Image (cartoon, rainbow over all chains, first blue to last red; front, side, top):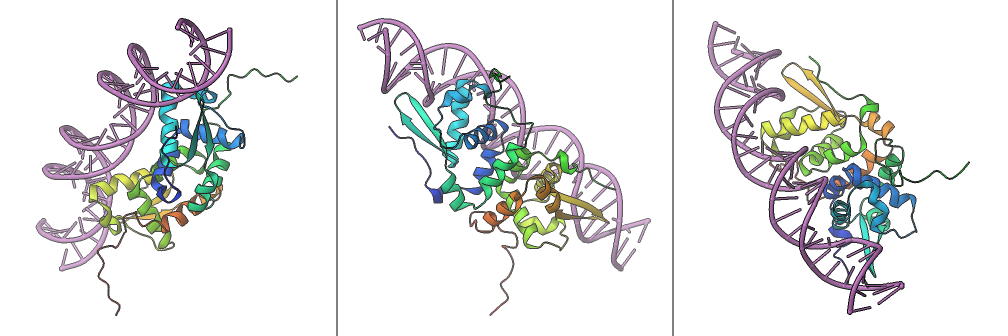
Length: 118
Length: 118
DNA sequence: ACAATTGTTCAATAACTTTTGAACTAAGGA
DNA sequence: TCCTTAGTTCAAAAGTTATTGAACAATTGT
C-alpha cells in the first residue's frame, strides 16, 4: 500500500503556493516543521478540523508534493518533503515556515493541550 | 486619486501565498521583478489575459500587499512591494521570484513580441 | 468639444474549493 | 471472531474565485 506522490520535478510552483495559501494547511506544515524527525499521523491534526476535512487537506499537501505520506499499518505517517522542495525551489519552504512560525493568525495544533508546567 | 493598499503589518502570509498561487499573477510578479525600477502600466500585461481580467488580477495583487499601484493620469503604475514583503516575510519574495524565473510552465509576458535580432 | 486611450465596475456565469455526514475499508487487539 | 482505531471515499451543499462582455469614468491629445 503506497499512496501516489509527484516526483520532485513534477512539483509545480503555483500549485505549491496555492496549497500553502490556506490557513489550515499552513498550520499543518508549521506543525510538521516544528516536529521534524518525529513521524506524525493524521489524528495529530484534529484540532484543525474534522477527520474528513483533514483527510482532504492532507491529500492536497501530498498531491502538491509538500508532504510525504507513508502507510504503516492503520496509520499514515506524514513528513515534509524538505529536500525535494529545497532542490526545486531553494529557500522557499524555509522562508514560508519562518513566516508561519511568527503568524499569530494561524490556527494552532495542540491548542487544546493542558498546560502542565508551574 | 489613490487606491487602497494594506499597510505592511496588514499583509497576511496565507493571503500572499494564495494570491501568488495563480499562474497569471505569478507571471505578472515575475515580469515586474525582471523590470524592477521601470514603472509598468496595466497594458503591459495584456498578453496574459483580457483587460477586465487583468484589472481583477492586479487588484488581487494590490489588495494582498504584493504590489503598489500609483495612479498617474490615465495610467496606473505598478511596482512590487519588495521592501514591505521582505520586512514582513524575509526571503519569501526572492525565493518565489527565483523559482518563477525558472518555471517554463508560466505564461510569458511579451510572448507576442517580434524577434528582432539576427 | 470630440475622440482616443486607460483602465474600472457591474452582473452573470462558469469553474473550482472547502466542508459536511454517512458509509466504508483495513489493520490490530481482546 | 468481534470490536476498536485510523483513515478514506462519496455525494451533496456551501462558498469562493476566475472569466466574460457591456457600460462607464477620467485623462489626454487634436
